[in-house]
Amino acid sequence: MSELHELCQFPNRPITSEYLTQLKYFLKEGIPATYTLEEAINYELGKEDEELSSTTTPLHLICRSLPKDLTEEESKVVQEMIEELFSWGAGWNLIDDKGLTPGDILFDNGFRDSPFYQIIVDAGVRAELLLRKINDGDYEFLSEDEGGDIQISQEEELLRKQIEEQSQQEESEEPQKQEEVEEVEEKTEVPELVDDKVEQLKQEFINDPAGTQSTFLNTKLIYKDGALITDQQDGVMMDWENEIMSKSCDTIFKSTFEKETPEEDLEEINVLNIGFGMGIIDTMIQAKNPTHHYICEAHPDVLTKLEEDGWFTKPNVTVLKGRWQDTLPELLTKGIFFNGIYYDTFSEHYTDMLDLFDLIVGLLKPSGIFSFFNGLGADRQIIYDVYKKIAEIDLNNYGLKITFEELETPKLTLKEFDNNDESIWNGIKRPYWRCQTYYHPEIRFY
Ligand SMILES: C[S@@+](CC[C@H](N)C(=O)[O-])C[C@H]1O[C@@H](n2cnc3c(N)ncnc32)[C@H](O)[C@@H]1O
Image (cartoon, rainbow, N blue to C red; front, side):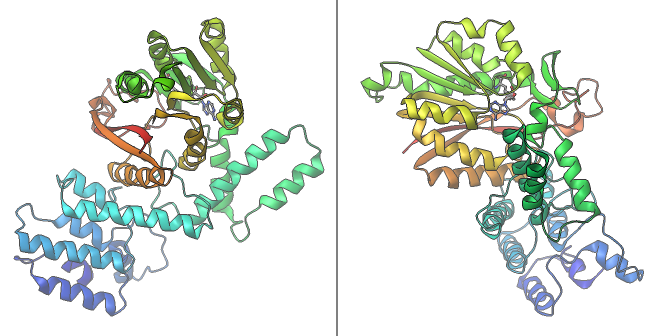
């Protein structure tokens, strides 16, 4: 173990400014803020070229070693140490030998409400926003299994985005002459990334129904035991979300009961739901009997279910068949405006949400409310917290205000119940939810 690593484990109390001085000294001497325990061990063993399977950084060690009984002065020193590490390029989402980010460690050790956790959230927000800029205006997005890798690199994210766009382009241009297909492939090929790892990643992503829309839309879906799943056991919708749907339904009707709502907004109560799934929220919307209830749904198997269950013939229901990206712009041109809009799809990413915001501002009535299933980064609390802030920043740029209500989620969704027969994830390939608290969003114009 290096001296830097030792320092970050606070061998002596009290934690005085001498710690900060020492830390600055090591960093100025050229030790990277991301220098890992694994690298130090490999160095001692003369195996410097060995690939790292985890990245336990000085920041992880600080988070692991934080005493519970810190004094105010000690807490200040630790905060400055964390800030100092970030100013030298420490990673907020690197994964240690236990599969945890520094923020995860703080959360698990009861420091969720501490200034240390907040510093990491702020650093995460800054890093994600910066990545967007670096990606030349292209948006960074989270995959459902983000965090499983040591750190998803920017190149990989860029590649994912390009693959997704390529698949969608191919899909929309079918049938196509072979030469044209080859031309598209050539154009979208990523220079300098053509090695085995990238090829493997590309294949995994293309074949993953949760990762690529075109794959999802061609994957068979099955309704069973209170869930809608793919034939590859991806959970598309599950009935543990009932309470969230009920709350969301109340939210998108909320402005229709408020006395400040302008009369003209109440002449017709129009509601739009994007993503039918099991029809849980649509059934709840119907119970409130809006004037017009629009349902946007893209998957053929779900559309069959809508047909079988009589949704096409309900007097106040209009089913928009196809992806919202294709069907919603027409509503704009027709001048249809909504009191409430809900968004809950599958196999889409934060970048899609950003595209959706462009339409939402045009489709909402002045008093209208937008809400969505907030699973942004929800397989890790720290990423969930970072994306809560990012969503707020992005929506503010549209003149929209977001507030969150905290709801408890069922304990059986949590990791510690994975080996329990009652775990909600039994028979599901990959849990898409891991947080104790759900941040229920309500979005409206300022
Ligand atoms: C999680 S489910 C929605 C569950 C729903 N909130 C409920 O209460 O049962 C997601 C749904 O979105 C649909 N979907 C996915 N991508 C879509 C898109 N781009 N446009 C429209 N629907 C989409 C899926 O086919 C699926 O039916």
